[in-house]
Length: 416
Image (cartoon, rainbow, N blue to C red):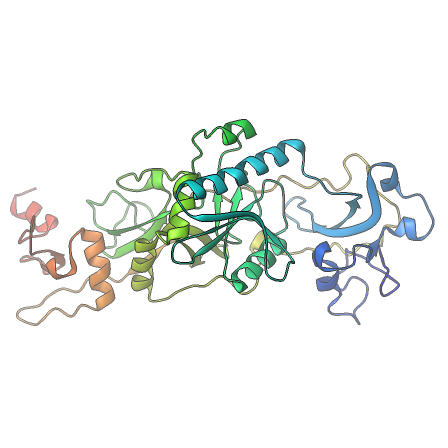
């Protein structure tokens, strides 16, 4: 392609794009079209006066850069900008119906709500902004067609800087916005069902914290031991409602409209703890986030820059520049299907060391964090914790439904 600003050819197959003297060139040309001159990048064939296939197919000779996905590689691909960009009729109808449902729900709950709200600097417009009684502002972004991760991040950061918490809504499990900002996924429903108030569940993006002691009687698997082993530690992890023990009630879009604006449900970012992912964004009950932050001893804000995950790293084939316009050619650089991003899998969680044992008459040395986690795992209040009379492990020792021996010691005493 041709860079109209610098008057140079760009070879997307080279790591330096053919211009080692311009280290910022890649960042400049991959910026959102909204943030640069739309006519910055030109089809090379068009620039040289040769046939440009795009003009006969509703596209322009001006270009943008996207990442392809070919057999595990992520090459840079030059694509022609449409003469005008419009969502499909189906997407437009679903988008409008969802936006109106969010605003209508907020109004019924007595919340302030407004559609098509420009952010202070007017560089972006929120589909709907719902304001809670304490001034919490939630910016609903209904995104039913593909949007680049950088655009999601840019608009999210812009919203946060102006006192708005972004809440992105997707209908596709492959949507690139998933885990790039606070999000929720709904079903791909006909617009009339959305408008008529048919049940609209949050299928992804909302989770509950589960804390459990890793012992043989636990219904959950160990987070650190392979196979079916149990480590005796306390684990904490996030699960979608259907995978909670016991199962939690599903969250409807009306619930999230109300709870996000009142602060009953809040966004949380859980950084990667060992997998190939950069981290996960999710909406959670406010009490669960408070418990999580107390257990892990940290608060993770919205990332300051978009993280590149393993499958986002650009690859370069280092070939000669292609001077032919390929617009409209069947099979030319067709990308593999986008991978599923909403897998409803646990996050990797957090593990606290095995609880200390009381020896003879020495006092129990238990940290505040260990006590908080143990009370959550055992389902009792912190001051109801105490040592098992047999093994000394921390257990529900005092208060209602307490016992002197833990389950393992009771099994031994009963000859099991």
